[in-house]
Image 1 (tube, one colour):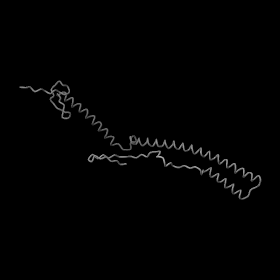
Image 2 (cartoon, helix red, strand yellow):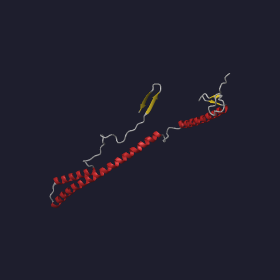
Image 3 (cartoon, rainbow, N blue to C red):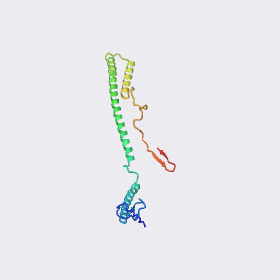
Image 4 (cartoon, rainbow, N blue to C red):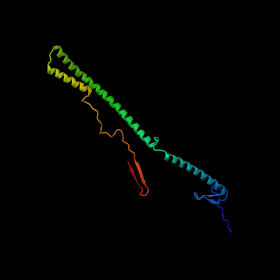
Length: 184
């Protein structure tokens, strides 16, 4: 007669494995099986805890401004505004330089007109045509001072957009068809 060898407990390897766990298929002695069930009970408590936290988060309104996607949008907005402010500062500096240059040229033209007007007055050598011409020249200088005709602001459409447009996309995963699609 042959004796059947007893299967040892997987955990302690001291006692005979009398019970098999259906989940992990390990053989346990009575004491180790009870410990194993107690460990599983603790893991279940962790699952229930995570479940309850997720339930609370799902029940909260969507106005949560701390969501990482909203933070990405805020960061894009801040970066874009910083770029706009930088470019606006550079353009203002350029405009101020151009306005100063234009003003210098207008001042030179104004001196020439002033000399002609003064000379005409001092010499009493003027008529209606001179008065009309001087008035027209002064008006043109004033218009040039207010709105210079030799420069303007325009958008550079040749370059790629300085500020990249963002959009929100949703990925759809259809497990039955195993196809991915996007909505943007």
